Length: 254
Image (tube, rainbow, N blue to C red; front, side):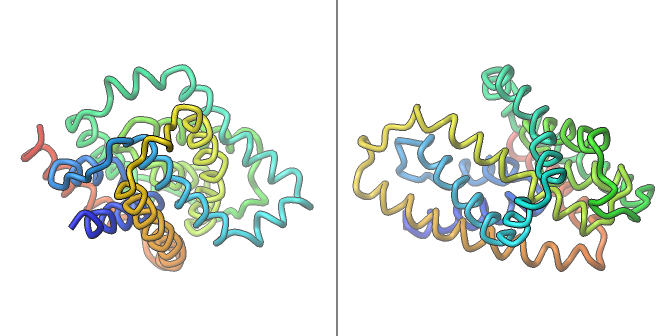
């Protein structure tokens, strides 16, 4: 049963890391109904994020290799990570201690859904990444910083910001996913010194490996099919889903 639960956690984390429905919103529900025998929760968190990181790197390997000859775009991606990096560095403890409540998550889920509906309606959706400059990239970067608040959804808020600066929906999605690479990498690396892998029990190691494998697979498939979906469909269905999830959290967990 513990291994089956590890599969559930891995699949949910992998999908919700990139589909704009908030990984934290789903994980807060899972932790209430599923008890995994993991003492080292930090290791579990880092392992799942590395699975997501590996999935997005593998999916965008051609684009990543292409950055070698596209210094401008590489610098824009790095620039987009600065706001979240700085705010996360200085406010990490406050966010962890004060903003992880079900009430906050329900609010940000609902508010994010409202933003989806607004920017799907008013966004021009005409530009590709060649129109990006340091100013509008910082707009998306500051939006990404808002995703430090649980329930916001990093992919959701950055895609919305991309629509806000006029990017085509698919372009906004791709840029959002490329932006995630340095952020996920940085967030995971800063936690490595705190890890105590030597303390892991044999069963915990098996659970981590299973969760990693299913998180990687589900993240890769989520990226692939979400990009296909957004070519011809709006984000409105995800807004509706977020409203429902926010309502469930308010009713049963607040």
